[in-house]
Amino acid sequence: MKRIRVLVVDDSALVRSLLSGIINQQKDMECIGSANDPLVAREMIRELNPDVITLDVEMPRMDGIDFLERLMRLRPMPVVMISTLTERGAGVTIRALELGAVDFVAKPRLGVANGLMELSAQIVEKIRIAGSVVIKRAAVRPKMIDQSAESSEPVLWLNPCARRMYAKKLICIGASTGGTEAIKEILVRLPSDSPGIVVTQHMPAGFTSSFAIRLNSLCQITVKEAVNGEKILLGHAYIAPGGMHLKVGRNGCNYIAEVVDGELVNRHKPSVEVLFKSVARVAGKNAFGIMLTGMGSDGAVAMREMKDAGSYNFVQNEASCVVFGMPREAILQGAADEVLDIVEIAPALLARLGCAADRFDDL
Image (tube, one colour):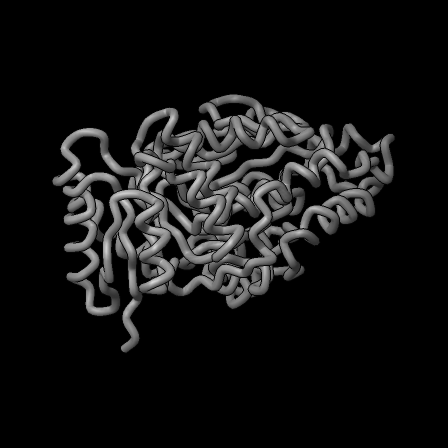
């Protein structure tokens, strides 16, 4: 069995030792070296040619984000960020995902040794996923979304008179590994009066707020972290808070966000399965489902429930996914109406809305 060869980059000798030990305990991976700063790491990458890098954010001589940007421009490869769980760390981590990092691990601020050991299963899983990802040079476009948001022509509804009908529609999105950029690719293409949108992205507590703020700065729609009990409005997208489940409920004729605690579902909280099940129940034929890149099968069964209830579902194709797990499972469940490249999903959704504008079904 070919082992995943990992280079650990972190300025803490303790963290380097712990990560190396965690990696070397796995039968399918090995730590081939460690570096205390990016300049040392640069030479080790040339010499050792690792399959995956774990990269700290804050380091001497060159911070992890500057190094990641140069790495993805000159020698794209799978990177798992090791980010401290702080407000600043969350924002920097979102930037790292924009630049092409496959995923991240939230490193505890205190009790690093015990904290990292408790996260060992998560760390090796993310390294394992990263080791299966092929990073394409052409796909690394740090400013791609910003440019599309700035240069896209204004989107005009095909039937402006039917705007009031969009309140009856609901768009729901599920994603995991690679999903932050995929979600952004869709949301920046939606007009300010689009139907309400609910989103579950697998992400821990402390990071979803920064993710929502970043999206809000780029989109015509308003993007925010969901709050329990709030009305789901036109032109708004609601992100499931990390560590909580997001459901959709009803209050009279309005959709509302329900943010609830609970057990892990499919090993996740928030879970796409939880969101999609609620949408199948309360929105039915007025819903549009979108399944994006991610490892595992979270949400696939519930997406089929949505389809059985009358929703129209889009699934991201393998060529544009970072990880094709969740979309593949949705397709196998028979939940997909269309399987599309990520850049095709928003236009197809808008076309579907426009074509259906004069014949929306009553709730």
